[in-house]
Image (cartoon, rainbow, N blue to C red; front, top):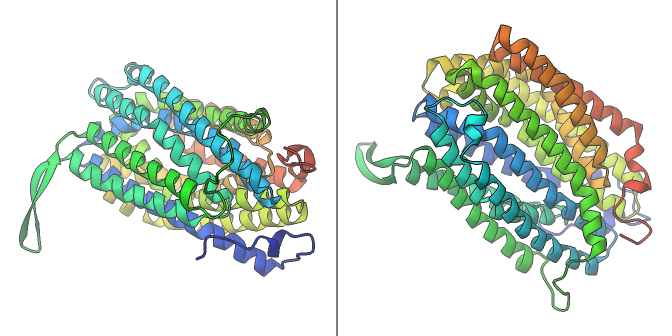
Length: 477
């Protein structure tokens, strides 16, 4: 698939692509992102199986801090979106000179903010597991895992920023390939660092494999190394290989108020949304932690298993951000609306199918993740509860991507706040004491259905298409 798309065939004032042509473009942008997400899921399964083989305590150590890693990672993603949405709209408007300036400013801000978030994470790593009510045999590994995760945050944010810029320019292929490569590196590094040196027999042949035997710490270190290598490659491709975004001489490396204000306008509501979601996940961890090590491990692995369903939605959501953003930049709000509707329909269809597959295959999926029969049984039970929410979960994911492309980032944050804190956590607090982990996941299922309906209402009402939400308006940032 070529990297560059002839956007004029879709976005020029006299272009009138039919539904089939629009759907082809949605698929063309979505498929690489979906494949990257699916590969990431497959590697997460392998990762989880590696740690799961060490026992329930090791799985629980990572599961205990996973909600906090989502919170930190989500805030970093918000910072990246503040610049990538500008890239999409400026590219659609054909303002390549301003695109060059945004690329430079985005990289500088990503590095500085990543260092800040990494320092904050390192500072809280020692006391975090205790605050989350972790068991005595879980807290030391959980603390070391989060510390190493925090140290890699500057590279993680650089990877996310460069990758989202490439995506919003229309190049889905490069970041997708590199993210797949990162997953492969993650598994290779983890295999070397988690387990001790050992001998395995394959088809009667004995192979001596090296290993550091670091356990949970090795899992964190392996992921950090994979993130660092991929970040450097992503930035190289952005700066020197991208036909649309590679750096050219004559554009200064300086921060500009107009760009930073636009980035803040986009990123702050997204950061609020991630804080709301991440804070809710942390509160959910505090609800689950008293249910015991088996429940914490089953909860963590069920989240990993469920990602088989919802990561394709995030791939389509990324495509929707690009398509809607470039349409808005080109002044084609009619196309922005059609691309949004097509993307949502595709996401709902795919996640309805994957949800049905997850329901049928839940026990088998857990058999791959852990040898513990108690964790397998509980995890499969809660996974089947969640399967019913997948179509509406897809709607919320893809609609959020479309709204982001239009510059409407505040409304999704408010909707997530109402849904997560008003529905999920309230229901989880009431159901957990009586029904245990299945009650927590029933609350999650109900909340995701409510969230999907709220986002669909926002999409259909069409207020997100108003000019006040756009970053590019009348030729000005």
